[in-house]
Image (cartoon, rainbow, N blue to C red; front, side, top):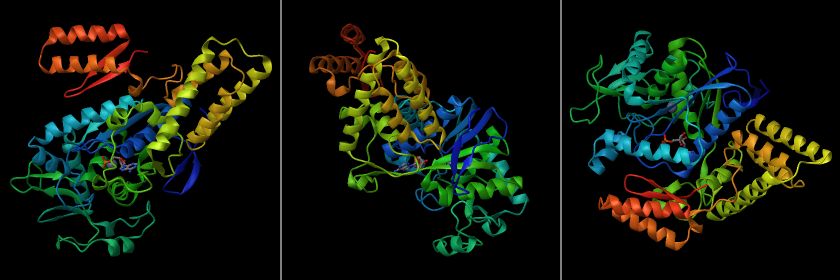
Length: 465
Ligand code: AMP
Ligand code: ZN
């Protein structure tokens, strides 16, 4: 196994990577709350998760990775107040929380696929693991870390001396920073909910030793990581917004229960900004992958755009920036794919290709420095054309995930209007359940070199490669 270095949020240092049981590496990534479409900021965080997993695999490790899907318990303010995000979405759309979760999970996984994000080995739905969460909370109560109030079970942060170690704020800071408690029965304002008791009409509730209720958001990740990865594991990832509350609380719960350190390495992806500011619905700048595609950008051009900024730096999204990335990405693919039929390198070029390959690998092994790795890939692409460039790029695409073997990609914007019109006609036929016409038009598209992927209420037209 090769030497990797990763930045650990806990120590604030780049550390040599040494997993607990090589060649196995166990990782846990906080997954989506499936009450809405994932936006491109959320997806940047999963591209980062993917860069990490692909790099580990390339370096010779076997990964056992878990990503959860939160379908209960994430309240509107990330803490203990507000409504459950799933329940709110269900009410608004007049659907059941299960229907909401199913719909948005499907879209989410389709987005991951489009972005070439490899699926973690284990996808864990919160609602499938309620028993484990109840057992976890029960154990914390038995050990004196949890206590009951009229509206739930809370974690007493004053009992966990190291509370705040990830975000480097101490208990006094946490107490001072906490909002005036709505719940006056809490021992400390910063104590957080492990379990919430449900009002009669609350839409999602389970039987527990404390009556009907539902889990807190933080306990989900502690209970599911323990279930699937055990009481110690190698790497935990998430976005930087999780550092001060969600991950601090996960550490408190898990380490209180186990009596020792649980996660060796904490890695966090920085935020994506849009036009230099926060993404927000009210500003109308929350984009999805679908919206980027409608504007003619391919998901992989967005992936290239993400890789071009280090995961620990903020990434400012602008359409100009994305256009630049799309152009560069296409040029790169064009050069590399054209090397497929190029002659073998002379000895000088062959040496340079080998040096570039080593430089690319060194960059990704150094805390996932993908911007540098792309720079080195470009240096290689500009060497005199030879088959070796193609071979190395295709091998290293295991870490880039950019389909570097393919020629310049045709984006939706390049698809001729006539073809789009046939696809529209087919979609209308399908909606009208006129399967014969729909099939005939699909065959027509196929003959022209296009495939249609059907969604529930939409479709995607792709150029056949
Ligand atoms: P959520 O579905 O809200 O739990 O968020 C899913 C993931 O996206 C979490 O890991 C967040 O940290 C991350 N995230 C949320 N907003 C952004 C953003 N603007 N840029 C990057 N990551 C984000
Ligand atoms: Zn989590």
